[in-house]
Image (cartoon, rainbow, N blue to C red; front, side, top):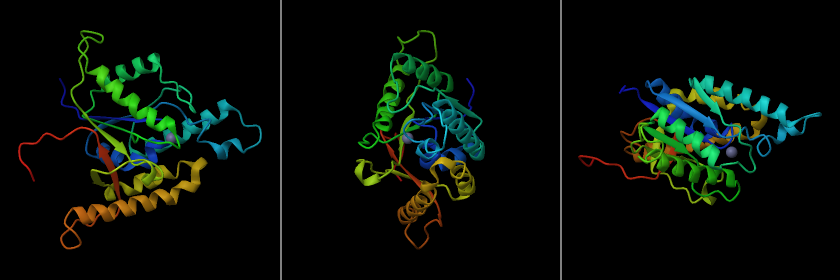
Amino acid sequence: MSDKKTALVISAHSADFVWRAGGAIALHQAKGYEVTVVCLSYGERGESAKLWKQEGMTLEKVKTERRKEAENAATALGVNDIRFFDVGDYPLDLGRQTQDRMVDVIREIQPKFMMSHSKWDPYNTDHMNTTQFALECRMIAQAWGHNPGQKVLGAPQLYLFEPHQTEQMEWKPTTFLDITEVWDKKWAAIQCMQGQEHLWNFYKNVAENRANHFRRNSGGMAGGRVAKYAEGFETIFPRTVDELE
Ligand SMILES: [Zn+2]
């Protein structure tokens, strides 16, 4: 058993991890974690409108372009393990085959924590289906009777990252993470998403607002940490502690 620290991010489309968890990813990479990002699809049909407006565009060209953007963003965040399942989008094909692939990855990585989308997203069912899928795969990876002999999964927390149009998603943050020290990396990764330039400043604002919440919840304006950028997450499972603080 190695004491390697690992984390797994399951992203429905190839840009989602950047906006929603780029700071958490860069921060944990910097702390010595090995973060694996799995993009289930490239978002080639549903999240690539700007590319589709170009003359002579094809599905393969869009996918190639989106893959390049995601790889560049991963590099900017310090991630060297990014995997593309390429199961299509709008809708994702999350059938048995995809499930088996994901369970294999989870058991291989043995993540200390996992991240995925919000539980509810009526604007983008790919996102909420991914969360359901992540929960199912986590459960299967814990089952002793699934591929007996393999190392089963422990009980990693699942952090749900902040969705777009937060208030519509029944998403409520339980954790704020200060990402100030890696903001430059997240900003560089955001700018790799050439196809979605309209979202760049929106997500900068989100990070600034969440930093305000971080400051408020870490001791208010007097004595609170001077966080300039933060990300919010909702947790699914309870924390287990020896002492309350
Ligand atoms: Zn998406």
